[in-house]
Image 1 (tube, helix red, strand yellow):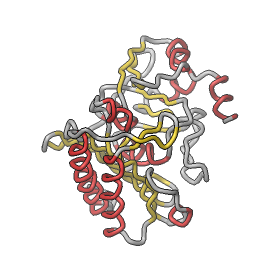
Image 2: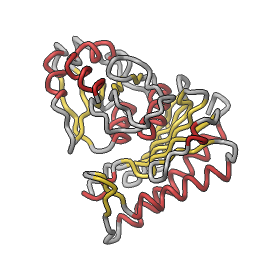
Image 3: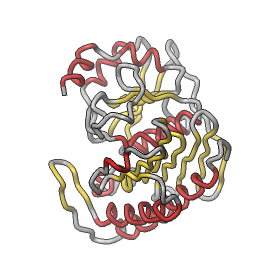
Image 4: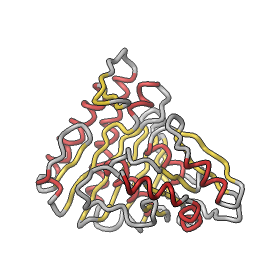
Length: 278
């Protein structure tokens, strides 16, 4: 798989699939939903998937740190040279709504950079994996192939991935300022929308809100860069995994790279100021 990360990539992909099977078992049942906070559900699927992934990573890579959504963030883990960021069930709201648009995301951060990632969508048996700036793959129902982002950029039409349930009002302003025809592609979780870019079904994805976290984007950024894409915060700066705040307070922009500058230029200054103030 390149880059000297073949073992890590294999382990992460295997754990994502095993966790995905546990998620589907809960998905097929009449599961309970609890809330950690407003609009922040958690189910047994989240907890079962997390236990599978965290215990597996701990066993295979005992010297690495692990940061996962459903457990307290360990500052000791964050100080490690290598840190795994895990979202055991990205899109729990989509899981609860039974849209199928949820995923498992695993990423490895090494010396402050996302090096490899896995996104697995259990309902579709669809797995994306990749190594930063080297390679990305998509495996669907056992068939594995290389994957690349699109090459579209203004003045050619753009396809913009947007949230199905949490569409941000800034999206309308960005569309109007891009100066080209923009088609929206609605989808659920972060992993699902990144998957649209990885499979060439979308060209850009802007998340202006501060409500995603490092575990949503670490693995996603690594795969996206492996497929030729790019990710930054809304001001065009690196994602800042060394920040003490686990939230992506400055939002993020994920693109096919060719359109990145145009998308950044279309983000209104007021949106940047609002995010800085949060």
